[in-house]
Image 1: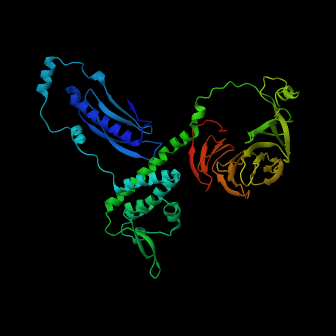
Image 2: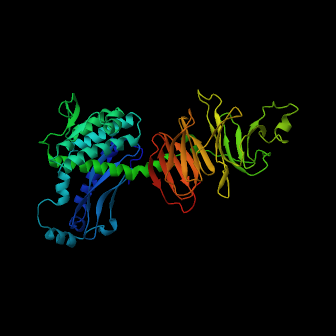
Image 3: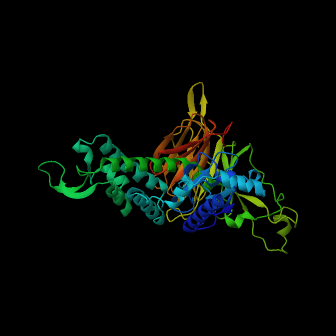
Length: 485
């Protein structure tokens, strides 16, 4: 088995091609029972290097039938290639009689399907496939998201499919350059390959009026003499590529979420109790760490507390006391500031790192709602704290705010609630940008990730992936048998 996980895509492709030749050569020198296997079939497998923007298609031949099987297997996402033969079915050495019998039994014939296929050069990629690969490379090089890639494919597929299914209707053979959807998903993303892909599908850029009497403008036109078969083939190619992207989305998501940072991979540490922080009068429901090393705790006693380490020089009178009474303890966290302002239990808290707008950062806290006999006595709130002072109280959720998290870029934050929704808030205006609906039970967990994406976990046993920029749900992950927290 040859593994190409760490190779570049072109090296992997060359190595796989070499193994293809080796497999055919093995078939040539194998004993007669194996070479005479009937029902040879051909399988085409896509070899994808998931950490690059390259995709290649290789032809693999598998001999099936008789008592033996020899073949080249290409295993999907990891780019592994293996050549296997059932050695147990191949005699170690033929006797002279067996060799004579085999020679007599062999009848000269035309080249086998395997030999014919090996001799045939692989079919070159179509112009659409070349344009799709070029577009993918450009989008990855520009560090744009794969959502942009799929968005371009989806919109161009719409234009191509409409033209293929309605060849006689002129309105489906023209794409207006100023169309909002075209600007948002194709031309407007600023990648040249997006328009080039549309042109590869047969549409040509022309300056002409959209309607009679209009001024000329950019229109992409599919000529009447365009090859209908090529258009159908382009539709099939785009459909397959979109399906492939959707199938691998969960794999990429899993890799993104679970991959360790290299510096953490070999971390070994002995953890022991350092100190205890006492002061809350009821159970602690949430905590977070600020960028300057403070600990923030949220409690059902309606308060938040900030805890910090005292900087005390070793050898001074206060050193032992500052360490909690034992010099073996590195340092104790002591109560510094109390944040009071919630009228009911505090359920969650998080820290927003410092920025040009908020040089000291912010603390966000979410509260329970107090509803009795159908009457909301205290609404669920998200409180915004700056420098120990309550800056704003945000309303919107209709039940307990159970989790909070700022976006990776610090421009937004999300709040999850028992009302089954997630709200995305603007960090500048503190207004709700989007209310994300889809979960069918309380939302318990939030994890923002790169690219303005957000993972949410719920008591409905699912995880959802959202785009915080437009509020769209990008996918649902299922499999848990209980609440995801």
